[in-house]
Image 1 (cartoon, rainbow, N blue to C red):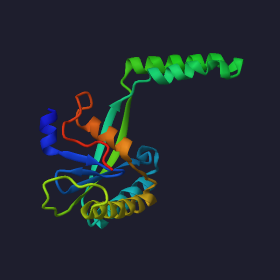
Image 2: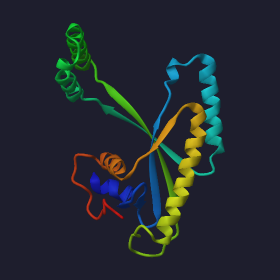
Image 3: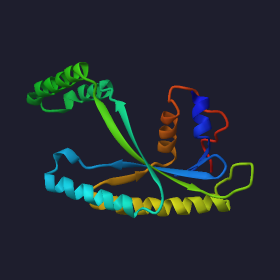
Length: 196
């Protein structure tokens, strides 16, 4: 499967906030933190839908929106809660025990899922070289500047909706790409994961 993914998404290098895909296509990934649409009034929902439609119609470049659903493992969280038990007031400790037990039972009955939203931007340059570029070369710098401009436009367009945007930097970008490439498999060969 990793070989098939590499044919579709041949990552060649990861820079501080962008990655080189193939010979001359660059991508940047942002995580979006949305508002809870279901808790809004009907008028607010309608306003958000209209604002989102206007945002999408106003874009002059393509974006890709990825929704990832990950099963939550709460063992570490529950262990951390339990380890801080002696730091809370004695009369509150039974409530903490009840809360931990409630979470444990909830997780055993139903899967806890965390949804994460990502926006992927791409920019295609024109390069006739056969080797990947390094940071500081003209096409890489041009891609960084253009993707930064696009990130700013997306962030400004989503701000009225209450959606916060965070650009994935090198380590977070690596984890995102690694999870997207199968996660449990060995790293794809031929990728410079620490491109400078």
